[in-house]
Image (cartoon, rainbow, N blue to C red; front, side, top):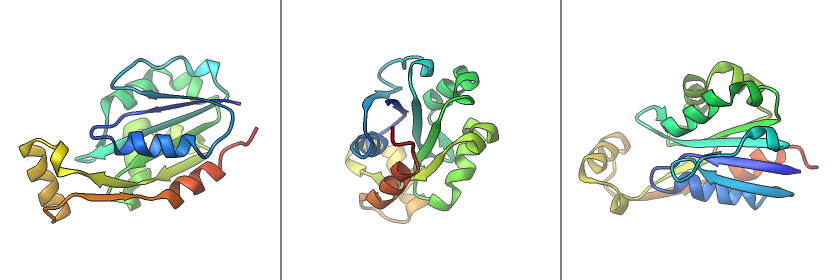
Amino acid sequence: MKTLIVYGTRYGATEKAAHMLAGRIHGEIRQINLAKGSAPSPADYDLVLVGGSVYAGSIQKEVVQFCTANRHLLLRKPLGLFVCCGEEHKAREYLQNALGADLVARALALGSFGYEFDYSKMNILFRLIVRVISKTGKSEFNLREEAIRDFAAQLPKS
């Protein structure tokens, strides 16, 4: 099975999650960070997994643009959608708002993989915003391997 994993990431948490996910599925896997390169057509893949991270309630524009440009194909493909965010109970809402209820309803798997924020990678403004929202001044690393495992278990195997 040929699988395409496309994602957007600001500071690397979603990239780590995508790599962890790739390690849990079989077949030919191609991973694309949409901020660094253009994605191939989903038409060439048996399974498409799309992920992003949430900042101030929004998923990266590159992820939204990919889904918008390929909506007609994604609605006909086996599809999985995931986010990395601190408000995991809002993951479905974030996905629906950014990508559309039609894609969310069509997805075989929806996942929320946790979050990371590393103050050493942030500019001063973003550090301040994260500090106010998270109510902590220290970096936190909370990617949830069990959520990634559960997501992968919902995907087709062959």
